[in-house]
Length: 478
Image (cartoon, rainbow, N blue to C red; front, side, top):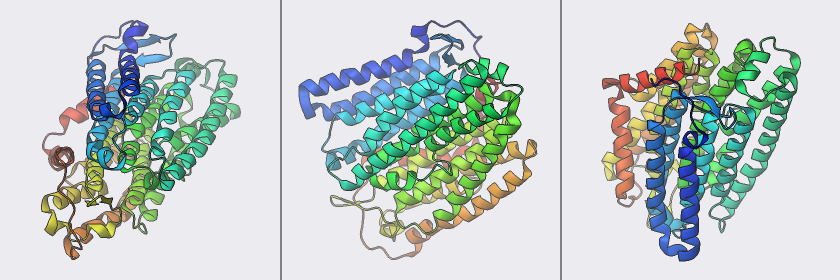
């Protein structure tokens, strides 16, 4: 680990500047050259994201001194920033074929994603409540636009409107909580709040509840999950894939940093909140998905459940728990991107199909796709020795070490229930008669599916690089 250094403001925000300037350059290029640069914009956006990722990986540690103490660069921030960037870059890559056919190859799409990722990176490095709110709003405003990007479709417009209205409500709750915390501690800086919040108090706990309510909305945790199924179903499919990956990483990152960095003295109070939210998310994600017939809605409930599992590690309130959260999110992003690559491949002619029944007999018509999708679904269910099993193992182990036995037992039971709807999809692919054949998978979807499928299959062979990097990242917070 690099020794902490005093970073200049420019150095600290260099990745965010690369993304923001890149987005503005692509926007100007598109404004002057029109839709002719749409394909170039997609490729350029991926290059810009890779450049930002390289800068993040090479940055030294920095004390939270940049921008008046609002910004921190540590191993935790670097790891999760790279993960969010990977999620965004792969999403744009998977969008190539879809944007050409369904969204008329518009250049604004990658620009909005770049602006959203800029907010995510700021959110992950936020060291005070003001930076947290600014990063959250920059990310969220871009996501509202993405949800309704196909504005000529009623479903997309409805999805964007629902997301915007409920998102504005959650932002108001978060801002109210932040104002209460500031009022009772006299500071917005996480380190200052930690020093002032050792005694707790009813007012501070109220502020904490509202702050966590706003963050729960961003990760679609129960009881603030109501937008997720409708938005996932109505938004363009690549956008739903993006929602399921990168924004979840940023929201979980700031959730962890806020809980551990700002409120270490009242861990018992926020632990109770997280235990309730985690149990509710795991249980609802397991049971509500059973009746779904649209695969995008099913993935929405699956995402709710997975956020519940990730919060199990945070509820432990220990370095091992945070390590479990980081490992979980890395594996979750891989599983999610691979599964959504298959969903994007569900095309017959110019028609995208979304029903689980459309996967009938896939093992006969597309055996390789069926195999990798089955492995990804088994991994999401937590079947050993796939990567998803280890993700759940680390968070449950941290919960048991912290004495949260009931939480761990309920998590295991919810995971067993969740196996049903994953196995239902596998049954449809392997045992039902085919009713048609999907088009040939585009090269980029083949690549994403192959890489993620191999990752979940072979993770158990050599898990130490990811586990060790997560341990280093977690220790940087304590």
